[in-house]
Amino acid sequence: MYSPRFDDYELGPHHPFKSARSRVVYDLCRKLGLLDHPWIRVVEPTALDADTMALFHDRDYLEALREANDGVFRDPMILFNIGTGDCPVFKGIYDYCALAAGASHKAMRMLLDGEVEIAFSPTGGFHHAGRRHAEGFCYVNDIGIVIEELLAEDRRIAYIDIDAHHGNGIQNEYYSNGRVLKISLHESGETLYPWGGFETETGSGDGAMCNVNVPLPAGTDDEIFIRAFDEIVLPLVGAYEPDIVIGIVGTDCLAADPLTHLNLTNNGFSAAVRRMRDFGRPLLLLGGGGYNLESLARAWTLAWAVLNDIEPQDKHVGTIGGVLLGNQEIVDGSLRDMRRFASGPERDVIEEKIERVTGFIKKTVFPAHGL
Ligand SMILES: [Zn+2]
Image (cartoon, rainbow, N blue to C red):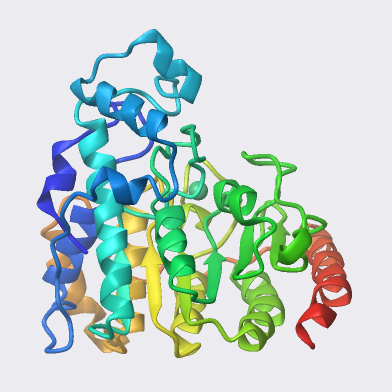
């Protein structure tokens, strides 16, 4: 899903969230010929209507966002947490959010209608927004809107979130809903906003044992991350048999990200994305966070290549480097990051912490799913 109109908006010159994210990924995919295949389409979204956004959000909250569209802050907006440092008012705020939500929504419809098997919307995955408040750079929760519509059509949903931040907006809203299996692998709330998302938060009522958190210690590398993914996500999603998989693929889990403390590279990242594809269900991929624009562009471009089995071969790296050097935003000659590993006593501590978490999940959550 891509629209050049995403570039018309800016949260602010010093805000970490850059609306250029969709364009840099689109440009890099184009340059590398990763969109030039008969089964690939670039679809331009349109703004989502307020009625559909109201499937998830309260009307007065949407109205406050619409009032902020002129870029002027008014006192009552603060009741909805609009106009803070993290969630500033900016010109076109409502239009931007409606366009982003429109992209996620259109992608979901195309998947349900069987038009495509995989859809990726880089400007999507705003997992912190609440029903009536903005939070963590997120205003309109496109994921919640999509989930509401899927639930109304009686679909079973697996939500897999590998953004470095815990997907608190989705957990909070669907904590007691057993029709949404929520799995989040994120940097531990001990060291990162939103300071929660611990393994003991397993869901309640009808949603008991359908909320799965895998907090990752600062410094977690590819190998440890993929091991946790394979041990927890693969069996649970397999047993759950969802109708659709929603993946939140924030690149802030990468070592290059300035806001977080994990040690992943896009090798581990893209391996997780490939596993999401290999469930063989319709796959809706939504961007999430990512605050190093170059790292984000390479990671999502690599993920796109991997999803489509058109990953550039190593022998072509030289050629690709030549192409990339023509783009000032991309200075690395290869899509793939250099490998990184945690080592020594730090690694032992990380492994011990993760084993404690995965052990807990296997003991408490797995039996409820027949595992
Ligand atoms: Zn994030």
